Length: 114
Image (tube, rainbow, N blue to C red):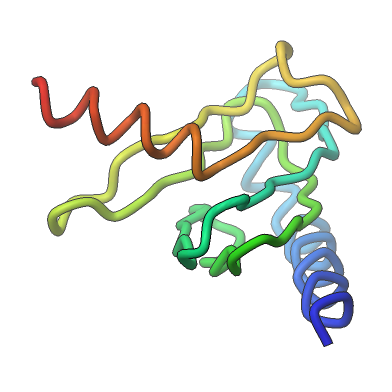
């Protein structure tokens, strides 16, 4: 069931990206898509916002593949405000894995201190 859910997310992201290609071209003249994985090693679900693509819910102890272009942001709603937790850039290698629960924890600490 978990594998089916993750596969569904990956296929949905790929379909939406292909449908929105012209929108992404506006982000940076000639965007390069990067495929990578988002993991959640915590026991809590992490609801994410990916503008123009989808709003995935990263399940506990899961991994989801995404293909995004440079300049695309991944947001998390914190205290009623959508905040950037990651902006795709050329430092994210194709095939890499980003552990979202750890990233989110450090971002929340940063937000608390500002």
